[in-house]
Image (tube, rainbow, N blue to C red):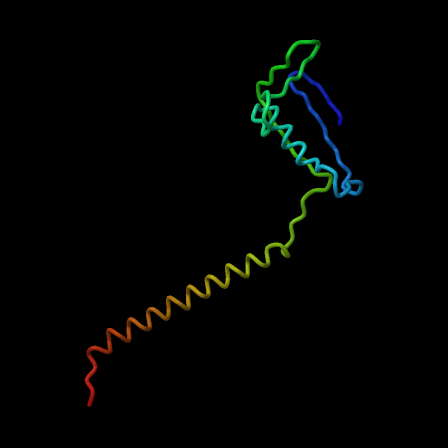
Length: 119
């Protein structure tokens, strides 16, 4: 982890090489999430709340917190992920249209059937 300080900003860079991560290792995104909660005073774990950071023996007061999560690889979006959702939407629309047409046909036949004269 690298810590950079430029008044009034403290920047902490956490990096994790995905190729070196083992199955039992903690994910860097999870660690950053819990760190963010501690900094904001919203810790998920019981005990004294908040993050106690001291600089030269003085407690560091955090006024505003901005947390950015950056992956080593940018996110890649493809149509493969959207295909299933798109097919589901199309099926729902088609079923709704067929049901609507069926209801219209049935109600029109019932209305017009009352006034037909049988010979």
